[in-house]
Image (cartoon, rainbow, N blue to C red; front, top):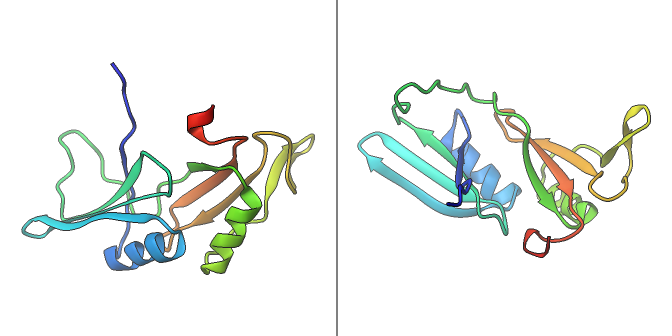
Length: 143
C-alpha cells in the first residue's frame, strides 16, 4: 500500500492575500477556492509539477486531537527544482524576496551553488511561513 503525501495545511491570517501570493508570486496552480460549509473556506494550491498541494483553511474546526498552528509557524517546507538559478530568477521576477543561493560547506552555510543535491535558497509567504528550495539533479519521475 502506498502512503502518498497529498496536502499540507499552511496557517495564514488573510486567505485572499495568501492566495494572491501563492498563485501570482510563487506561481502555484489554484486547485480549489470553495466555501465547503457556511463560514468554512478552503483554498488549495499546488507547486508546478508537484503531486502534493498546500491548503489554507478558514473556519474549519481542527481534526479531533490535533493542535492549531499559528499563522507563520510552519517552516522547512521544501520543494525541489532542477535549475535553482532559473527558479530564483522566476521568483524574484514575480516580486518574491528570496535568499541568495547557498550550500553547506566546510564551515556551515556558504553562498553559491554546491555539488549535486547541495544548492538551496529560501523564501517566506506574507505570514512568515518558510519555504526551502533545493536543486535536484533530475525530475522526480527520472530518479
